[in-house]
Amino acid sequence: MKQLDEFRIYYNHTIHPELLRMERKRIRLLRLLFFSAIFVTAILILGLVIDLLVVSLFMMIPIGFYVTFLLYRMRQFVLTFKPRIMNLILDFIDDSINYGTLKYDAKKFIPSTTFKASKLFETPAPYYKGEDYITGSIGSLDFELCELDVKEYSPVRNRLNYVFKGVFLRAEFNAPITGQVVVWPRAFRQYLIKTIKAFTWERGSDVSMEILNEEFLEHFMVYATPHTHVVRLLTEDMQDAVLEYRKKIDKEIYLSILDNEIYIAVTEPKDILEPNIFISNLSFELVRAFFEDVQVLLSILEDFDRSH
Image 1 (tube, one colour):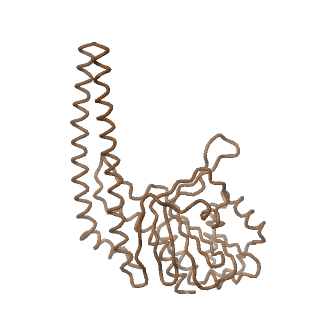
Image 2 (cartoon, rainbow, N blue to C red):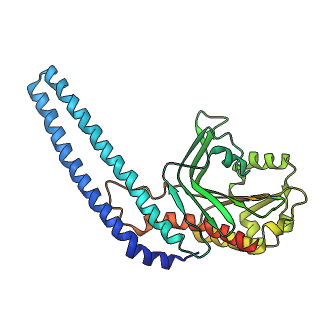
Image 3 (cartoon, helix red, strand yellow):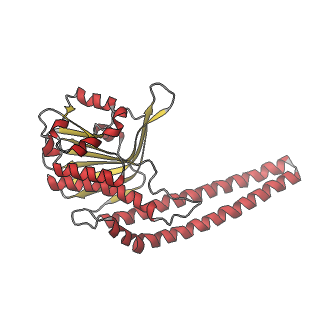
């Protein structure tokens, strides 16, 4: 996987010029909003001065259409910004030797049935939103990933509780693999009690005694089904890699290997690569956040493909 210093060079030569073009569009849009606000205010003041109800109501019709037009322009800016920058990032990533072509769809997302099948989260997921769907391959692994925001109803309060927000990946391993291993972040144990119980109901159990990496166990809980060769699926190299990625990005990582399917989730509290209209988007950090989240998922997948 390419490193951040390489990505910064690519950003300066390829992504930054595109951000400059989008920045000029943003400034033109801001000017339009500014002069529109002056124009609409003047019309409203004129209506108050004339003090004729019929005239005031008549003026509200074109103003309503114009405000709708402005909202449309703002929405179009947001919808065109993300795909342009996203595709440039993916062009950089899939230049790696072991990678197939990465494809992006802004509106598509992984269905809730797949999310639930990961056994990482036991939830009915009544609130389930996704976007930024990416497909591709690494070695012999075909994968799909997207951003997800998942919530469920609180059992004691009339509100929605957090389940998961971040980037979620599913991959399929072509070679036959038997056994099931689930890795949960230890920091979220209190929120995962229902999920852990559901897995133990399927005869899963704590297999921490099979993990020799004490630092890994400080951050993660490891469960597996009977007759699963845990260290064969979750190799020591993979443990080191997951731990290193977790320390590097300071975000929680979930991982499950269920027969020939792999699921990985990385928490991300912010909406990734969402452009601003009222402040500049000329920021390496704005692009870096998405690159690092995707890089972590694909790096873990690449390590899995290499070790298996």
